[in-house]
Length: 275
Image 1: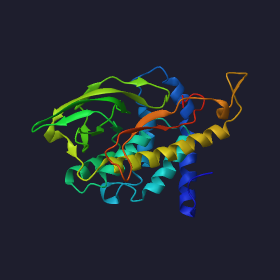
Image 2: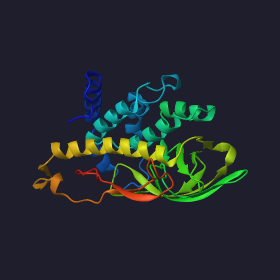
Image 3: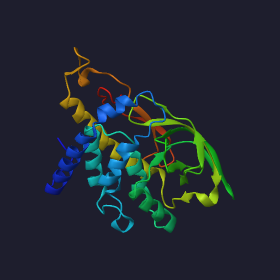
């Protein structure tokens, strides 16, 4: 059952699902299974053409001018089609940046609407000095070929670090449609975009909301493909397959923004996606 309930929402869901089916996500993911540096560039070009990650961005910045509900509906449909790439993270980062009323943040929003990618690190040790920004993050998601990295500082402020401001390696994990790894950050303070007014609660709300929508799409894929015959004779029942969920920090809640707790963003996994 799709997330949308209004006529327009159902139409959006249908359009995105039909598009996602043309991507051939399962085959694309399988072909890149052993490539830790896979960027899914051809798929991303299609994502950009559809404007999928820019649905909730302001029209004045090149986005769709809609809201987070429509963005969630599109992500659910894409996940149901197993579309690979940084759709979730880029949608999160763009939506958060759009809430900041500074020229620098608006410029990032325009670039994301035009097709730039984003990565995210929910925890780390990043210090902002007078002239330099330095630090490390243990896990950054979708940093391969990313143009922007959303990261918290030691003071729990949030920054966008541009491409070239970090280095490290990535690897394919349980989720074969994304890449993750540890990073070292070293760049000038002048080059980063400080997201004034963004706190842990806001970031957590966007991550959880959109990740839940994506998880709903993956669950739908599993139900649609229950008992699917794979490699000739072996049937895989998604409902019987046990795969650990992705771990990510939950950055507090409405009443406790400073707490760093762990939650499991559980994801049903389908054949070929590694989910």
